[in-house]
Length: 374
Image (cartoon, rainbow, N blue to C red; front, side, top):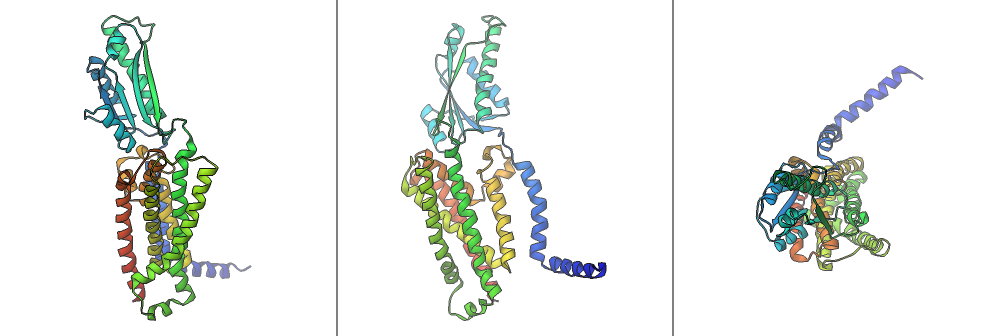
């Protein structure tokens, strides 16, 4: 075994790796950026969760309670005044995560030594991430009530205030973690399989040398892209039907919303995911590059979309990145149609961002394909 020959082969391989600028730069950039982004962004214990307070009591307690919750690290209280019906609708549409309702007789019961009830509604589609926020609502209420009773000398220090926090976990009252996971699993499987399959399509033509035959055919770039997508689109339909059959039959997944809303979400997300794969295949020069670029796209999609870690636990800049990912809106829409009775109108805020992403990927793919022809 000659060290000189080994060195010569290693030097040759190093030159090949460095000259492959797309692979080398994407590897270095992805390594550094993923450590920084995921290190700061991923937080399994979310803070500053959106909260609405419905105050029927209009008392000193409710004013102090609101001020104390604002100081809490777990809750971010909406300053607007809302009715119970409006707050409930905000909860259903995922515009807030917690609703705290103070009954009109809360202070009267507290001063009389009776049980003072506090009503808390929580979005239980994610049954784990809100535990800290829910428990903090009761702890803060008891501290504020104890302060008021001490100030009015109605309370002995050894006896705690009689505050009863009634928690209603909406949309997933049994706190089934499976109901939270399965909508994300659908998006993840489609994301991984469709992107990986389509990313290989044009790069396969390049490696086999059949790209030249496609260049001389009288086809427009858009026609080639659509033709490449159709077989994988039908493959995606088979995958979706298989996943839904397992979810409904084996895991007893409910479908409380409109089947048409679910179908529209799956269709828009499916074609957008296919378009990502087409874009990668036009940019990559080999199937190895296509696999690497697919992996670099899928990692932040899985980690920052709310599939594995709660969206509310991310800092503002990470939430901005998440808002650019189609899978973020797919997961929100899927959980809404499975658990929150979403119809087409409710689904629209999640459909149009995915549609915008589809148009961006489509235009970029066509331009990239024309460069490939040149």
